Every structure is written in structure tokens, then in C-alpha cells.
Image 1 (cartoon, one colour):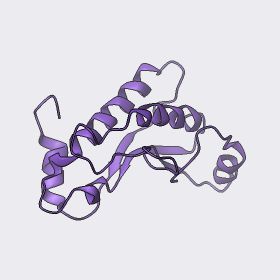
Image 2 (tube, rainbow, N blue to C red; image 1 turned 90 degrees about the vertical axis):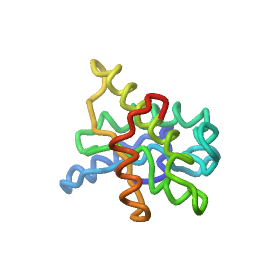
Image 3 (cartoon, helix red, strand yellow; image 1 turned 60 degrees about the vertical axis):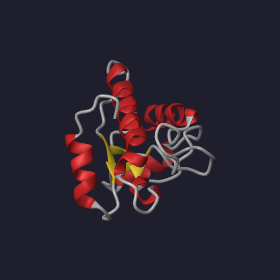
Image 4 (tube, rainbow, N blue to C red; image 1 turned 45 degrees about the horizontal axis):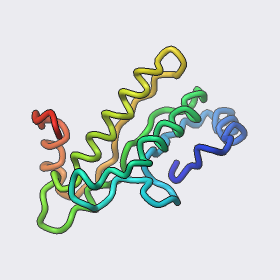
Length: 141
């Protein structure tokens, strides 16, 4: 599900999905508001201030539904990398956002159902992105 408004009640919709045995994967970083996703700017400017709060609000809303399968912290963010630039152009922002969201849900473990948080990558530059997201050892990235 993309562009959800965390201020709205999604109970009727999620209940209807649940009755049909359908699970939802909910996007944390997209929307109709400005600065609600990782941007095409070079790191660290690609992580808008409001994004962390918005992600937390979405997790609070959707963690209460048993049919929320997972959260996605980014949707094909690698498409926003300028031609010829490596994943490190804006990937550090996405990695930080994933860490922030995982830390938040872990911190709220007594009050919030633990739901996996991942990201969705476009098929372009698959090997380079896989290496970056899985093997980067620099703690600031």
C-alpha cells in the first residue's frame, strides 16, 4: 500500500482485507506530501526531517492490524540516483531511515507488534546495490 495517510483510521479497510485472508505490505516513505520519501539529493540531504516522524506514525497505525505483513522503507529509491553516480549518492539516507524505523519498532516492542522492515529496489544496478546494502561496513553509511 502506497501513500497512506497515517492520520486516517484504516480499520474498515484492513478488516476487509483480513476477512479475505489478504496481508498488506505498507510503504513508509512515499506519499502525497512533500518530503515524505528519500529524495534525489546527495547524502545526507536526501533524508527529509519529517520522514522519520511520518514513518513512525504509519508504523503505529498499521502495527495494530494482524494482517500487516511488513513495512517497506523505500520504493525503488535507486531510480533517484543521477546517471553515473554510485548507490552511495542517496543510499546512506535510505539505510539510515531503515535503521531509524527498526530502532523505533524495537524500542516500542512492549506496545507495538514487531513487523519486518525492508526496502524495495528497482532492478537496475542490482549487483552494486546488493553489495552496498548487504556488505557496507562503514558505520556512518
